[in-house]
Image (tube, rainbow over all chains, first blue to last red; front, side):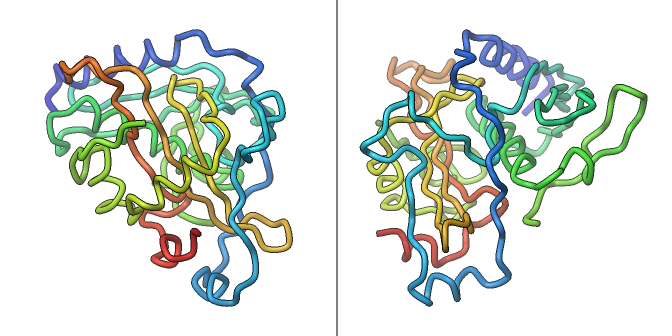
Length: 155
Length: 101
């Protein structure tokens, strides 16, 4: 993607995140996933079962908190710096309510707004899947702002 | 819900399959077993299945849907499934597709 496309992506994402989101959909964070060493062995053991986030008998009014949810993001704003998208956001469970800066370099990504938006969505969800990411994967650059430094892998 | 072919390294079916190891059947099963997609603050809808052992979540598969048309497409239809993956994993463990009923 070139600088023009990243600028379009920043505008598009700002519009998406600024759209009317019903606060009733916002939830507290659920318990984090456990990430076992050998998930294949667990599947093979016959223990456990798959459960839907929203079971077929449920309605949105019954919604329970889920881990890694984007709904824990408070404010969101994106800006393009050439081919780099810089995203500032807050994390509601963070007791300090800092602003976190995440950057993604789109220079090597094919020209596609869909791909750009998908990469951002995944980056945020994967980050949120890490327990206490805002304490483990960030570097403070001021008393209110921290930079996200890692890619977000299990654990 | 639409599942566009998309492309690897991008979005859609090929992205989910090639980049995250989630096949078409798994995507369909995740969607079909959820009563609704949960609206996210970026306007996308999330569907998910979580594997639990003794009520402890071990791994999950999530599918994200965009119901609005995308600016780069002129067909007027929803973009549909933008991605599917296992939170916490770049590529879902192979057993995920086999394990989901």
